[in-house]
Length: 501
Image (cartoon, rainbow, N blue to C red; front, side, top):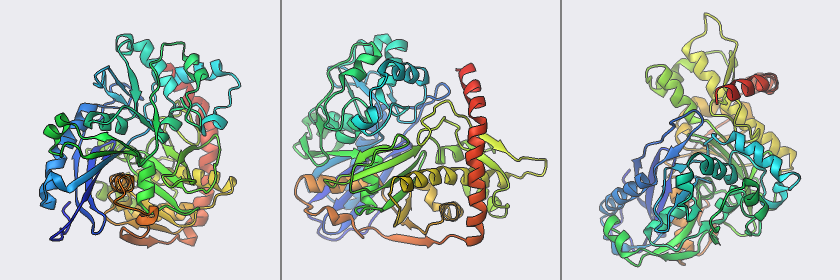
């Protein structure tokens, strides 16, 4: 995507986002806004049910391709870029050797292979209150079960591991930064407490040898500079500042303008994220808790294992039919004709249950492709509503709610979300995502941007969708039935999942 480039841009900031389907990068001028943006796709791997992996070397190759593209688009040389920050999936697991080289593919945040290990570590930890210690409970998101799985199934790899890092921290290391992990990776990993001290009991519960855990750094901290080797590979200038970025969902929310309590964001990506700003620590076993980049603020949030990924699976079942065609068919279908549980990759929040499975009920010989597609859109919306209910139970009510990522291009999906949530929803136009938030953080960390509120109103907002009172009532009934269906089928999901694992 090309932007209008003023004659004189001055200093530029590079933000990179390592996403589930691709790497995105933007060049930001603090005075003029985004001047160039580009994306490079990367492969995902799921060699077995519940697995979700990516190759870090593909992230590196994408960055090496994107940087020259951006410089050409902006008609600048590498001298114009003064700082780089990176966002990425969290808490992805990148295990590296003493040279900082990845020893295997990264295990991504929606990887669900370690369900047995979760149960074992939960038992070993006994009454240890991880919620109070880390802000989240032991779950599919936690690192200890993934590490235990790796040590058991790939002992040759684990024996060579010198450090365990996140996706964006590894990329900074590859660019020349000192080894570290960012605050929210540390919190969501479950390995550090809220003061960022390693929790010995969690490591001991795995019964395996651990490498030393890395120092935790705050977003906006300068942790090194582009090395000569990285400069030669990427086209960036050696000596360019490297700044700690952060978790993709956190920087995406910040970049979307979430700065005040009650501001909310729904991300319709491969997974489904929902975040809300809180002025205080909000602990709930059904949610995750991240630090907001702005000091003193927090981002309680949820992540559903499937969102857009479920629609991609649906497309594969229907011979790669375009989503626009499926939306057109679903638009004429009766709301709530079918009821679906979207647990096709287990579920993260609010259930923390990797052994849940997808369910669809209500089909008959007159069921259409449009009915099925609409039920998927509705199911994901019900999942988001369950999180909004948790926020409300904890005293946090969403006020200004924005919708971003690929799924937000579907007007039908936004209408269904507005009806199910009974809230006005604002879409963001041409939203660059976490790469923009990372670029702003790079500016804050190097003094090129002086105010955290820089993001407020900086990006263009799109159409506001208002809920339909008629559909609100219907969907409230279906939502209650959705909750009942989950309770009724969970034991069968567990039986099938464990008999085929």
